[in-house]
Image (cartoon, rainbow, N blue to C red; front, side, top):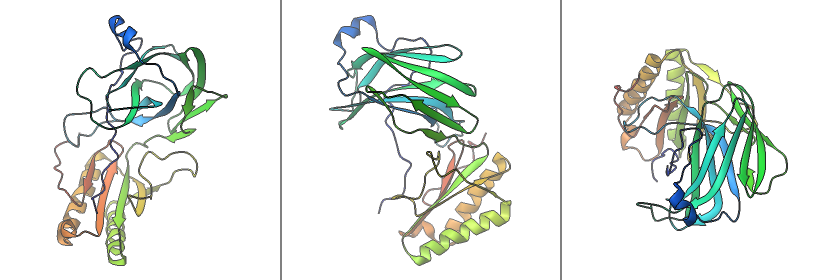
Amino acid sequence: MEKPTCLAIFIISISLIVSCDSVSSSQKTNLLPIEHGMRIVVQEAYQPTSEYNKAVKPHIQLLMQTNDTFSCLGYHIANKMNQTETELSIDILGVQKPDGPCPAALGPATARHKLNLNPGKYRVNFNYQKTERIQLTVTDSSLTVTAAKTNFIDPRAKTFWRYPRKSFAYLCSSHNAEAEKKCKELEKTLKSLFNLRSLTFPDYGVKPYPSVGNQYSHTAYYFYQNEAIFEKIGSVLNTYTDSTNITDSETVYLSVKNWKNRGFSSWTDIDNKNSQ
């Protein structure tokens, strides 16, 4: 069995500047049409960093993906976005072919925007042949999309929960009773040592952290007091792993991941240099 890994998304293009055209005038004539509409997701994400396991605060991200598939993962949705205090307007220009290397796998064309939005309600217009719109409601804890009937755009989920500050997920993948015992033993130790407060999410919407599924047999969420405490939690996990020989086991994998995308796991040692 492969060891659990975080779901990876190939980042083809990141749009960070409002009112910025994503394709030059000379390239517009070479754009491909979008024939089957787009999927829209508004959730929290992390800015890519070249430093492994570096702590970074999440931001609100608008992700667009075509329902059309292409021969590799380098196709980009050419677009430009304008933003006011209460409205975002996105002109969809078409699909831009890759200029450089393109990983050989079938996939959609994509585009991303980092959104700097305060709590409130925003109208988001998508302009392609005609205008379709959604309403985005931003709170400190959630991102909610509501929409009238649309044809070209397809909001993938109504509500995404945001990462609560100073929170982390405890994740375990076990395959027998002995492995499950180790999973619960470490969780009990962490709760006792650090007086952790449990965190729960509502039954509806999409959690920001992983849930129980094909990858994890057990998940739990907690608040911690400060970043130094989280580093100690990681140290305890590593110590527990070494003392119980979990690194040599093929039956249980333990990990913790916090709201800043920093984590520790039973299958690799992670240094403590990037906690700031």
